[in-house]
Length: 134
Image (tube, rainbow, N blue to C red):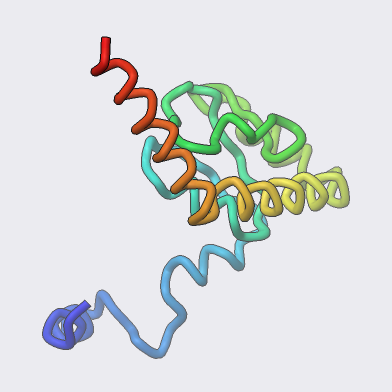
């Protein structure tokens, strides 16, 4: 971000350069809820937080299929109706939840690495290339 934009956001109270950035603050959270079809899951998964992930099928992308429920994240219903129950489970099973979070973060750091994403892009290009030859 440019100095001009940072100054404007600071004047409006939307940015405090003395505070850790949002991503750093979110990594301090014990639990994180993935709620949208964006690239946020890629950085959220690399922290040490336990992810709660709805089984909506919306999330797609390189490496996401490697994440397995109850091994790398806590699954939720698409409407989040079981979210409170799942959080209660995580609180009651703190060590098990910590292990799930650690497994998820370890897998994410590998599956979502720069090299892994480039390999995935290569595979997509190869598949599209094969389609174009037909």
